[in-house]
Amino acid sequence: MNGLDVTLSTEIDPLRTKSLITGVLALVLCFIGWFFNRGELFRAYLIAYVFWIGVPLGCLGVLMIHHLVGGTWGFVIQRCLEAAVRTFPIMAVLFVPLLFGLPDLYIWARPAVVAADPVLQEKAAYLNMPFFVIRALIYFAIWFAIGFFLSKWSQAQERSADPAFTQRLQTLSGPGLVLYGLTVTFSAIDWLMSLEPHWYSTIFGMIFMVSHGLVALTFVIGAAYFLSGREALRQIVAPWVLQDLGNLLLAFIMLWAYLSFSQFLLIWVENLQHEIPWYLHRLTGGWAAIGIALIVLQFALPFVLLLSRAVKRKPGALAAVAGAVAVMHFIELFWFVAPTFHPDGFSLHWTTILAPVGIGGVWLWSFFSCLKGRSLLPMHDPRFLAILEEHGLADHG
Image (cartoon, rainbow, N blue to C red; front, side, top):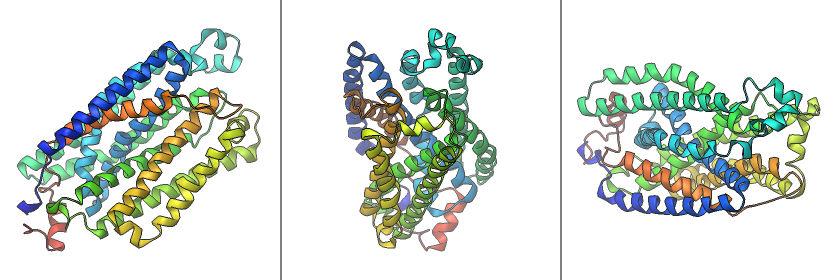
């Protein structure tokens, strides 16, 4: 068993340093865009921010699902999930720059526009800057609190080997998922759907719950690929564990496709004048090519590949599919946001490339800092010990 109890320590320091330097430099270059086109800067920052906040948010949801259902796949990635959810403080700090660009992003934040628009006046009780900030504070407080206790109790179990902490983790995860669903839904409405406040979709929040889970799975599959190269973990990150992760990724891809198509079909069938234009802006010009690419590369091709048992059981192949899905999710967010401001045709600003590198670098630095020095496996969780015994690994090493 001791052979499995490995940690990441000094070997992770170069990754932390490179991530931080890259992130800070990219953000500095990105914010030079303030002096040239601040509107494009904040749009790029919003896209990048929603992409990267999706990783810890998705990890929080997957972590709670894992505590409720168990499974070897969850124990292999549990420490990565916990490290990700401990990054909410840095993500709260990275959210602050968006507050300086609210009028550039949202027409409901422009008093002159609201005064001339009866629809915005009706929605002003909800769509206003003070309440927007208050809601964001509530979201982060809930995410941080749930993640804090899940991580704290897991660490306490690792130190004390007390099985009672397993019950605590399960007890919190049930209502935690309810709060998670509500906060993710309203944050998606606030940060993205309100970019076009005349448009609405009752499925939008659910799409983002699934999307966050999808991008989180792509991240932890990459982490599992990294861990699979460590000698002490090769028997734990086994092909059948990777297959479980691949099956879970496939399930999320199918659910994402179902919800996205349902939203499109319902809006198109209803043929309401305030809903159809949202899709019309995204299905003309260069935006139509992105829409087709999303269908092919975020659903059809990964779906076909993940049906293969061989692909799911090979760490490199599974990680490649996961990486492609993550890239397409970022492109999907770009497709959600950019046509709002460029409905006539495709437009790409240089800050759209720099912003995700900047935020991602800082986030990865925080993630590696949270992961450093901790056991990579929950060796004192009785459920994991039972799995080790079942597969004859309890005395490994």
